[in-house]
Length: 286
Image 1 (cartoon, rainbow, N blue to C red):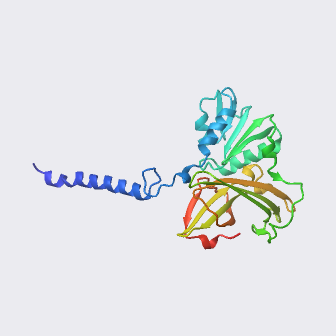
Image 2 (cartoon, rainbow, N blue to C red):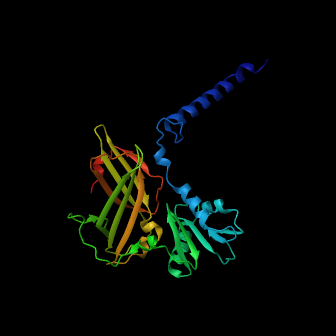
Image 3 (tube, rainbow, N blue to C red):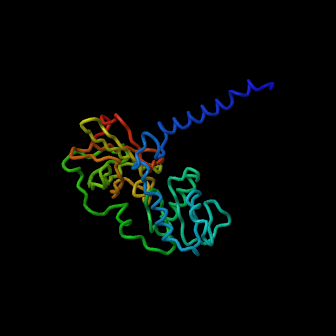
């Protein structure tokens, strides 16, 4: 029939496209079927955080939330997203500081207003989620983060202070780790910052861990909101000491060898999923 020969390449090209897509997903994709899939890289805890927040918010409560996290609370009797007009009398305000769909300036402004206003208190903070409750009291564990009134030695275990830039430096560091399975390690880094100059923006803070093995150098980095987002850098004042804590899971066992840590500020673009970086061990220092 006329045109038959011209139509034959179409199924062939379609099959080739499917095979190419499958091969690309296997080699480069993040799915469990991929060649380079590392489960612990995607075990962020954010899903568990959402479940915990759902337990804290009654269904009949009025909730104001950022765009993406609001999708998990559509069963609420009253649910508004940021920017809703007219405003309502909310029982809870829930922000996801990593929500790229929300306007960051508006989102940070709502967070800062809740922190400073006194009407709401933070009752939960984890993995960039911050939950405020009207008329509540901040849990003791969250009260430990922020301005610190105790004595802090201006040394890091006998070493020179770790530089954090011109505006702040780390004056004390505590490190703890615990083994979780064969290829995972929970790491807790407690820092005491000393603010040297005003910081006008809300910044993210990156911790990079490098471990040398007999075969290679494994490097993992993750960016956080200082003080779980409860005391952003824009609120720091010169001379103030700030207590901070970072908990995350390494996707490898550092073994008995030493870990090298590198600290760096970033423009508030935290990546809570973490990231593996190969061959950057020489850049990590502590």
